[in-house]
Length: 152
Image 1 (tube, one colour):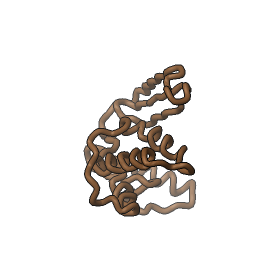
Image 2 (image 1 turned 90 degrees about the horizontal axis):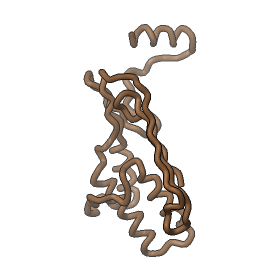
Image 3 (image 1 turned 45 degrees about the vertical axis):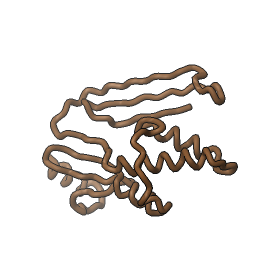
Image 4 (image 1 turned 180 degrees about the vertical axis):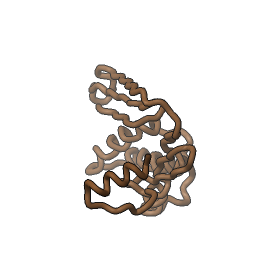
């Protein structure tokens, strides 16, 4: 089936096949007969190296869960023009958490259903700092997470 798709695409569009994909948009792609695993262990290692944090201790408890780490990062970024010690400590904790979890990723098993399921949740004025609402959601194709979002 993959070969048939590849032949159709090569006939319709000017393209060539470079073989199995290893990296895509900053994600590492590990393919096996059982499925596909997406992760960013190389990216995490590069970031830790860039900020000379390879020898830092690991933080086992994150500020937020892995998908919500975007919110923690954005909170730190808000104060980049007026940094204080607390902001730097929070950013360092995020980096130490990433150091301890470089192999976390998304597993897509080969044999899985194709039912689309979505979940969402929100709170009204739940942030004690600015009383803004936070909402989030995730979408699954079978048991595979395909998208998530968090918004304040």
